[in-house]
Length: 414
Image (cartoon, rainbow, N blue to C red; front, top):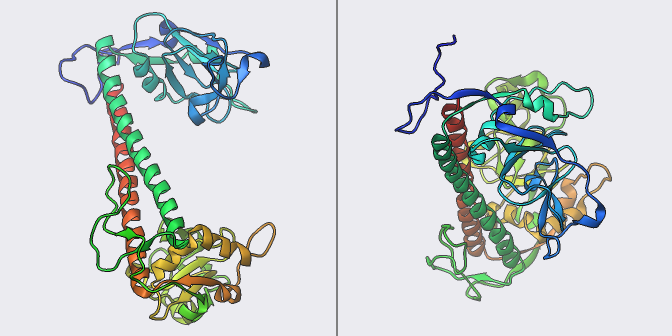
């Protein structure tokens, strides 16, 4: 066993040396933060209080506030030493003030602190505690890691940093697009902007670097004015999904039995999907679903809704409101409306209950909302769907890149 070489599975060309197993106490002087006087603390950064204060928290990399003094001046690593986020490492290359049980790791020799941030975050820390989990400096000092040469540390750190920057950029684009969509929806449903018929020009305003599909938005009166109507005028049938015990009819495979947990953000999520047998489905005719039906959560996170796509036609559902359209409305337009500020407000008005909110089918039927022509409804739905597709694509890229990084971390370290 002593002759086993310490080399990673995945390695950059030009590196042949074995990695060396070292104790963290041989690499770092490890100390803990402490208290700070209130007179040295500000919750906003100013010219007088320019130095970050870091504590044991995961959000914002542990940023607590700002100080007019600093305690750490060197390139170091901090490791959370208390709470549920114990053991999270961050490389710090600036002046700051550590507080409470935040651990500070000061290098004893020349290393790449970013490499060691990734390395320490790979350690499976075992903390035995009956109360709040706590990691002390002596405890962390006992852990061993495998250390390559400084040049290889730098190569790995630079590569993983580039991957993290890619993930960060994708997240920024997604956030910007979500913010843009939210503002666009508010303008659309407030009728501040209108759609122009028979146009295939790109969005008049969008998010730089992100394709949002085809939809022309202009102040135009080429479509008829919107008309205020009751919900039931376009959805004459509003019923309840099956309410009762269905567990004896559950199967590992079969007919989808959609529940409130499967409805979120204008889509049906098959995560945790329940399946039922044919006999139960056939018996529960009132809760059988057709394409373009709208499903709405009526208890708990009320108002969450989605359109039944072709994939879920002939499914069944549990304790959901089912709205069946006529030919005068686009179901997707209506669900987007219910995710707008005006739509949320209309749902809130009919919600009952204090602890757990609830809405009734009879009240949903009476909701008044402004309907554009069917053609403009479809334009709006297509536009917002195109933006959602871009958001979903960014989400997919974020997940793929995150998984790629996870695989790298497993293969690039010993």
